[in-house]
Amino acid sequence: MTSELIYNRIINFSINEMIPDRVVVYKSQGIKQEPKVSKKINDLYDHALSIFTQDVEPKGILKEISIPEFAEVFQGNGENEENTPVQHIFPLADSLALFAFTLGKTISDTISGLFSRKDFALAYMLDSIASASADKAAFMVEQKRDKSSKTLLYSPGYCGWHISGQQQLFKKLEPGQIGISLNDQFLMIPLKSISGVLITGKKEIHNFDHDFTFCAQCTTFSCIDRQEHVIN
Amino acid sequence: MNILQQISDQIDLGDDEKVYELTTTAIEQKIPVKQILDEGLLQGMNIVGRKFKEHEIFLPEVLMAAKAMNAGMELVKPLLLSGNVPMKARVVIGTVRGDLHDIGKNLVGVMLKGAGFEIIDLGNDVTPERFIETAKAEGAQFIGMSALLTTTMPVMKEVVDRIRSENLEDKIRTLIGGAAVSKGYAEEIGATAYCYDGSNAIDYLNSVI
Image (cartoon, rainbow over all chains, first blue to last red; front, side, top):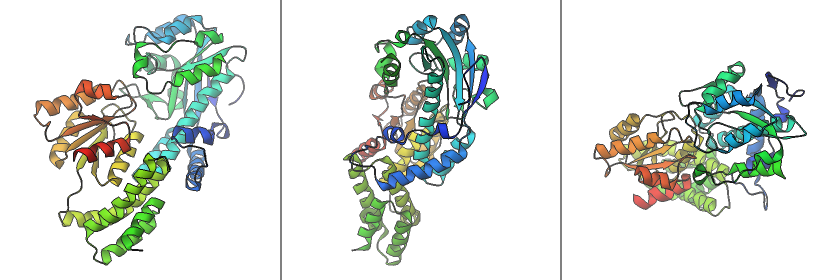
C-alpha cells in the first residue's frame, strides 16, 4: 500500500502485500495445523496461490467524511435495526472515512471457471485465499489510518447496519472508479470486494457488548476478534 | 486386489485419472454398472466421508475425492440411465434470487453428487418459479436452497409457500442452508430441513430416502 492515506484517493496495493498468511487460509477451511497439514493440501495451496498472484488486481478507494455527512449515509433507506453498535460509535470518532476495496473481476471469473471445470478443491482454495486477502486489505488500511488512535472498518450488512446502506455509501464514495458496482440486492460486483466506514478514535469507542437483538442470529462473532485487536 | 477395491482406494487418494482408467477397465470387464457404482465409487466416497467426519481429512481433500468420483461417474452415468438403474434421489439446488454467492452451494452440490445423488444445479440468482418448475419437470424429490444474505432469505419462504399452495409438500421437500439461515429460520418458514454443510445434507438425505 503506497504512502499515507489522505483525503479522497485511490489506493494501489502491491500483489505481494495482498498474499494472506497460509495459516489464516487453512483456519478458514477448518484445517488443523497439528500434527501436520498433508502434502496434498500444501501443494493445493501453492497452486492456488500462484493463480491468485497472477489474477488479482487489488485496488481501494477512500474518502474522508464528516460525522454529520456519515449520519446521512448510515441512515440509508431507514432499514437499519433500531439499536446498532455503529450509531453509538461514529459520533465519538476523531475521523471517519468511507472505504471500498476489490480484488478485481478476473479472480472471481477464475474461481467460477475452476468450478465449471470440476476443479473443486482448487476453486475452493482460491476462493479462501481471495476472501482472506480482502480481509487483510481492510486490516492494512485500519493499521495505516492513524497510529495514535484505533481504527476499525464497519460494513453495511453487518451488526444491524442494513445492507441497503450500500446505496448511500456508494453515492458518496463512487467506487465505480475502481470497478465496483452494486446489483439490485446491494451486492458488490465483483464479489471479492469489501466496503464500509473506517472509524478512527480512542480504543474505548470500539468496545461494545454483544447483546444486540441481531447478535442472536450471528454465526461468526468475528467482531470479538476485531475488537480484541484494537482494545488490548 | 479386485478392481472395485482399487477404484475405491483411488477415490480416497483423489486420483481422478486413475479412477477414470480403472472404471473404464471395470466396464470392459462387464462388471454390472450398479456394482461399480456401489462397491467402487460410492464405497470410496463413503470412506472419504467417514474420514472427514472424524477430522482425519479436510474439505479440500474431500473435494479432490469428489473430482475423482466425478471422473468415474462420467463413464457410469450414461450406462445407469440406459439401464434404468435409479440414482438415490434427484435434488434441485441453487442460490436464491438476488444472491450471487455460490461457493457454499457448489460445495454442497459436489458432496451430494459424490454421495450418489443426482444434482440439478440451477446456479445463482434463482427465482422461486424456476426452483419449482424445474423440480416438477425433472421429478426431483428435493429442492436445496442457499442464501448468504439476510435480504435474500425471504425467497426461501416464497418457495416453501408455493410448494404448500400447490399441494406438493409430499412430493418435494425443501432443504435450506447458507450463512444467513439457521435451524430456527427453517422452522419459522416451514422448510423441511436445515443443513449447515454438505456432510449434514448427505446425512439428512440418506435418513429420509
